[in-house]
Amino acid sequence: MLIKRIVLLAVLAGVCLGLVSVVPVALAAPANGTVPATDTYTPTPDNLAARHWFQDAKFGIFLHWGLYSELGGAGKMGIAEWIMDDAQIPARHYERLAKFFNPTSFDADAWVRTFKAAGARYVVITSKHHEGFAMFASKLTSYNVVDATPFKRDPLAELAVACRKAGIKLFFYYSQLDWHHPDYFPRGTTGHGAERPAAGDWDRYIDYENGQLRELLTHYGPIGGIWFDGWWDQKDTAMRDRWRLQETYQMIHGLQPAALIGNNHHQRPFPGEDFQMFERDLPGENSMGFNTTGVSDLPLEMAETMNGSWGFNLIDDQFKSIRTLVRSLVGAAGRNSNFLLNTGPLPNGELQPENMKTLGEIGQWLQHYGESIYGTRGGPLSPRPWGVTTQVGNRVYVHVLDWADTTLLLPLKNVKGARLLRDGSPVRLKARPDGVEITVPPAQADEWDRIIQLDVQNH
Ligand code: FHN
Image (tube, rainbow, N blue to C red):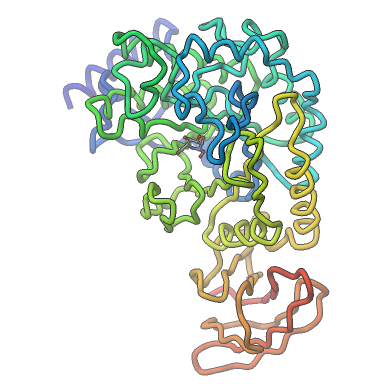
């Protein structure tokens, strides 16, 4: 209580001096960033509207692009953006990659055209991944794409303009852990091969991080939000509660109240966060072994890779089929979740051609069936072995993913009519004591999801 009062007084003093922008509702955390159990966060109306938009949007594109893209995983399968750590490359050597980063084929408008045609409504791009390299014009370090590379352009600025023109929201991924910055000390569980001096000033690092975030929130127009990652690096260390998260989150919401904050810490959301993400897992599942199974009532998002890597991997051509990806998108929507599909651009600035093809196919599917995805929320039935449901108003979409029989019993009352979304043909309904039985028409070739549109009277 006393701490809160002191903080409140300090904030008020800051406001009077014009130093602090106010989020009317949230309380600042103690300087060490501990999130007290009593801490509260009340999102502003702008923020709530942005959350609503986010849930309607349903489908986003994730981009992992950085110096690591040049190495393409160095001939190994696995997550290529981790090559600095995996190959134990000292920071002073890894830095040399900046000299060769020259993606002259990068065309932000062309990227955005591809994303738009895929049906994506937002894009999340790595502004800084664990390697520590700023893919934007940061004034706080020369280790950035404008000052350290022959490219000399700010791709995030170009992407921001292209997205705005196309009506696509842009989010920035930001890695809290950093394998390059000397002040990221004490180190966490990763990045020990970077051969940095065993000294550093943690709080100076957090100031640097907050400074970079301020740049991202003030130089690129209105953004969709910040997608944090890397907190888990200190999950089991003494620094676990030293991220000063509340200060960071308040700054972000103060600068752009509608900017949504998500943190891929794999825990239940902390105060100040606006959405919860699940990495390569449907919400509530933990097949990867690091996601929480605790699903909050915040907007949800599942992030997925096209192959086994986020960053471009030269040898990994084990791309997921369009069928698998569409079914993940549907499975996510049926769990009230967005689907964020990753592609790792090439070091020359082009998108991977295989991924472009897949994105085009997803776009075609969404053009046909998008009404059962966009603007929906998880439907009246929880996920079932046969599939999921989504809903908008008094329309329920039954997504039959795996069902060999011709009839399916839905424990739903008040179903007034049913038709196949594919062609509008009527679907037979039979009232049963415990719901309604529908006749599921056989799947056509390449029909990965038989969607039956129900008219229901809302209970
Ligand atoms: O380590 C990262 C990984 O490289 C990638 O960015 C993914 C994306 O969700 N997240 C981290 C692992 O949790």
